[in-house]
Amino acid sequence: MKKKLTSALAVLMAVLTVVSFSSLPVFAENEEASEINVTFSLMGDAAHGSNGTHYNFYNWISPESVTVTEGTSAAELLTDVLDKKGFAYSMNNGYFTDITSPGGCKLAEYTNGGGSGWMYAVNGSTPMVGAADYLPKDGDTVTWFYIDNYSSDPRLLSNKFEPEAALSSLEAQWDSYHANNGVVKNSVADCEVTSENFTFQLKNADEWSKGVSDPLVVGNNVYVAAGDLLYVLDSNGEPVNGVALEKSIGYTSRLLYADGIIVVPFANGGLQALSAETLQTLWVTDDVSYTDSDNNSKTQQALTSLTYDEGYIYYGTACADFSSSSCGVYKCVELLTGKDVWQYTNDASGYYWSGAAVSGNALIFAGDDGIITSLNKKTGEVLDSLATGLNGVRSTVVMSGNTAYCTTRDGYIVSFSVDSEGKLSDLKSANFAKSSTCTPTVVNDTDGNAVVVAGGATADYKGILAEIDAATLEVKRTVSAIADIKSAPVADIVNGRTYIFYTANKTPGSLYMHELGSDSSEEIYTPDSSAQNYCMASPVMDNNGHIYYTNDSGCLMSVNFVAPYLTGDADGNGKIELADAVIIQRLILYPEKQTPALLARCDVNGDGAVSAFDAVMLLRRIMDYQEL
Image (tube, rainbow, N blue to C red; front, top):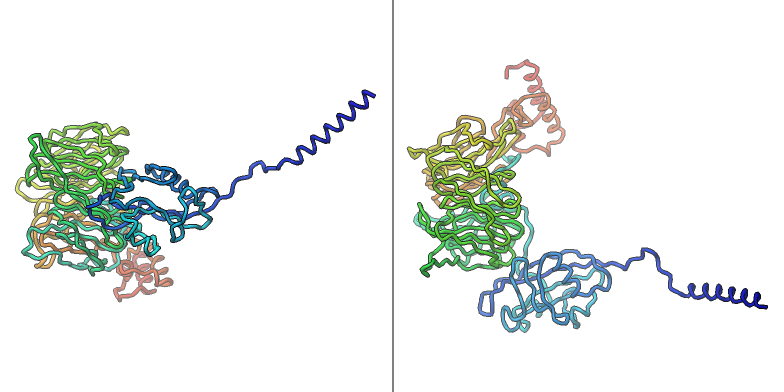
């Protein structure tokens, strides 16, 4: 009996076990929660206070697709994105009391007045629940936006939650002073011969005190400032847009383009940021403030180039005259908001034309005291310094790998190494001129050796352009010029040949070209009489061989450059070969591939067209039936 009872209990336990486990929910081993896609954006403002000027609301974070787990709230969506992008924030019971940009611009409730603060919208309307309680659905558009006054904000009144100033990421062909380290590769000419494209007058002859900036090329347009105006021209010199600036630029003004924003430096160190697409203002900073140890305020001039790196602008100022400076600062400003991040002060000397380079986490620059300084680019902390022992630097520092180059006012080329921690070493220098304020350009010669190209002046006040071995600083070659070369050389590398463009500081203010490795230069463009004057400006170049530059006449000139060629040299490599005849045959079959420059090279018989006659004539030349 006991044995039967035990067996029955065993059967009962087995049944109960099966029933119990069969009643539990069954989960797939790798089952994941559903995901949804949401379009997210964050629209901010400048921190202008209750009495400051509001310019425009604009995107701090442009619209982007974000994938989140279904059931994520609008508040969690915001914190996820802010954490990933380096923004700080504070919350109180699901309400965001403040959001701070990576550079430190804090927008909180009441920052810009009693009615200011953060709100959110979904698909063009503001939900009736808090962000912690709203669960976005797949395909929703969630916009977080800052308001200056909830009772009068036009976006709330119209239910149109769009930025007042749009930021489009336009492609820049020349985005700053000495862009691309001064090098353009394989420009494709859109004309047959080197010739004037246009001249555009930016100021009158009697406006001698009005400054004119160096130009930028963004998209297919040219941006240039004169006085308190910013002009936008197309590649043919026709105005397409323009706007009055908050203040006037100085005699030297080097614009910057980055992430859809044009930044204009003012005479006394302030900056104005504008949408490159619409020219609407985003923010304006105050003039640079400097007070010496005796509590005397000293006016600063913004004379250096603007350097951009990973969301931040770096530039220097000087309290200076043409020959010396008594003090200056280097500072960091956040591109997105105009917020001052840090400021480094030099109480003994300033920074005049002496732009900075970035190497890893280090910002490298030099000044009128001849001292090279390395700062932590994020904090402004001094990492290292190195005295050149020479007569001051008025050149932008240029990096080539881990080696930096600059020139000195007493005509030396200087090189030094920068390690991964921003430490400076291996200082070298060599004299190549009597004086120089030229920013050098580093290119390779036909043997692949790095060459530094720099300009300056001789003892008899003529100009000099030097080719210098980048490793040893041996001066390999010099070319004379009519006057001091203050411009940064621009190098155009076409079919293995390198052409150097520069200006000289003497009337007529012409444009010159030197082919690397040759012993001469040529004047490729002379301005019309009304546009002739001295010239310290640097040329810039787009991808179609258009060169833009200004001189002291206040005119912007554009020159179409076509690299020298042999008729019949279809591929532009300096030789006439069977491959050139093949290219001509292809152009006959595919005439839509013809460009003005190709036509000029391939029109062997000179009849203005590419035909089978050109191919036959070229083949005869190659086979020595006709003398070359």
